[in-house]
Length: 132
Image 1 (tube, rainbow, N blue to C red):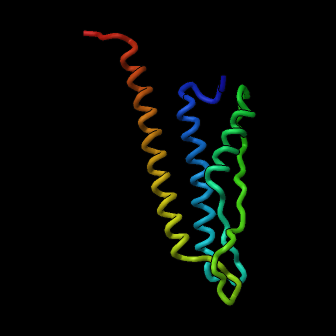
Image 2: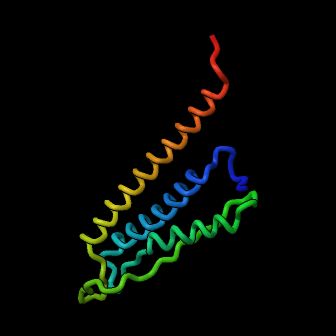
Image 3: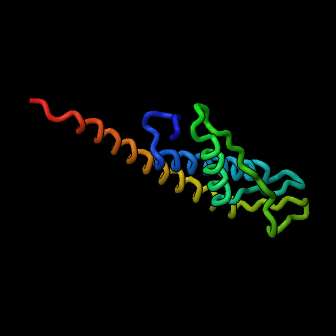
């Protein structure tokens, strides 16, 4: 059993991993946009599903330990993008789409996490019986 938190559930832990990977991807995309005018810069990204799986494996490897698993996403250069004459292959359109996707995933993850906490709060508040 994982001892990270008294309110940790398998769902809340999975949502935490989901948000960690999403934030890592968001940072990569933001970095790509920040380097749009850097000659020779190559866009970087991560495979969301693979990294989510890796994060879960790292978390499972640390199961039973009091400390949290350390997860470091693997960023890779994006292949197949159109390269400009200066060698830069960052596309504003692609990165903007990825930012929007990342923001939607983040909002979904936060809403599901709120729902988990609401469910836990309901269980705690209804567990004591009624008092008049």
